[in-house]
Length: 249
Image (cartoon, rainbow, N blue to C red):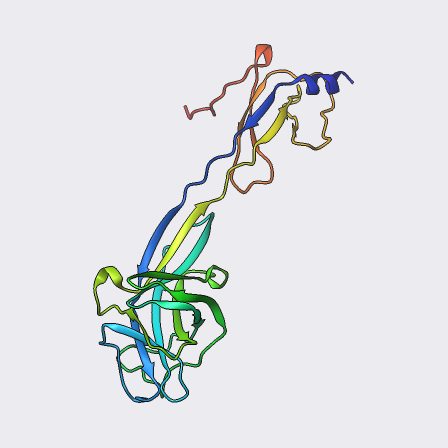
């Protein structure tokens, strides 16, 4: 019981939550083009625009490809495909982004040899003209590598996005926003130490030390992602030990 009362009387240490900061980076497209149903053998990789529209005989689809590497670890990532629209579109028009195979290049891509269209990864209604428009595909972003997309439209009206052949400040881009995970969530710890160089950090768990009353203090280091803190012992009084590891003679 003495150990129990000593533990309850020990000071509470509150570790405040670390405020997460957000950093972002953009990756430009390495290839882009569009295909035209009515010009099924046409190659448009050198065009300054990427055109899209629906149609039974004259559909157009835009293709973009990105190489993503050097991803940070231990963070939450948000991935957004951004295209600069030269014209606006009302909310009745739906623009859909789908993943496609990477086995294409903008020097040979045509309607006849375009890769098969995959499942939709993001959609948006309408476009803002003269600005970047984004599609959040975070749920489909899994790792560094090459990503190819096709953009289609539900509207029979033609819309154009700036390609990599156009102004550099309007080129297709992929934006990654990284948010570090918080180190703690305002955890309150009760610290106690036993004479036998062991103890327990109580964080809402009924772990009580056995032995004589607690004495001394501990330095606590919280490690991100760890299930419990890393404890380093600091003793006082007759049982005092060096805080630093011994050095070689």
